[in-house]
Length: 164
Image 1 (cartoon, rainbow, N blue to C red):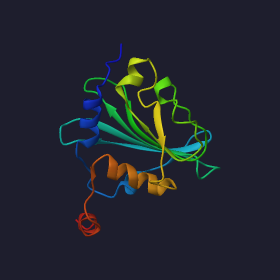
Image 2 (cartoon, rainbow, N blue to C red):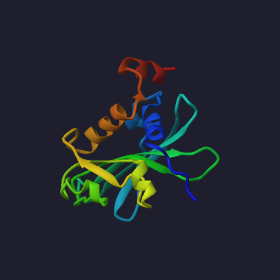
Image 3 (cartoon, rainbow, N blue to C red):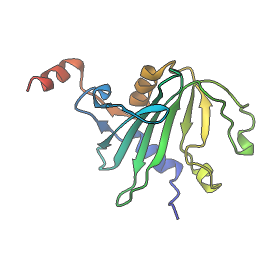
Image 4 (cartoon, rainbow, N blue to C red):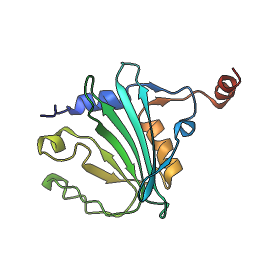
């Protein structure tokens, strides 16, 4: 049985500093899948937790994408999705009755891992809210970097690292 992550543990994982030595886009090497392209890489947080960033994008529809932060619990091969930044490609409907006030929507949206969705046997990141914080894949990546506490060196330091 999968351990339920509490909301406070989820928040600790999201706010844990995740340092990158280069701009996040330089870590994305896309591979062709059936109907999309996908890139992923792992990063270790300052508290020694392992995270995976996955970016999927449609080869046909530019607004059909996902930018995902996953957490891999120690000594497991599981990936728990903590955040998912989705494009404007499908309708989303939250499944729990207490979320019924949020009508189904067809817009850019962010999925959030929650304790209560896990307790109901639903996907950990099943709850989502529409957003205007991004409008395409690039700005969704920026949103993940900002909201999930990635630390990226300034551009001048990136250039110095490349020259060493």
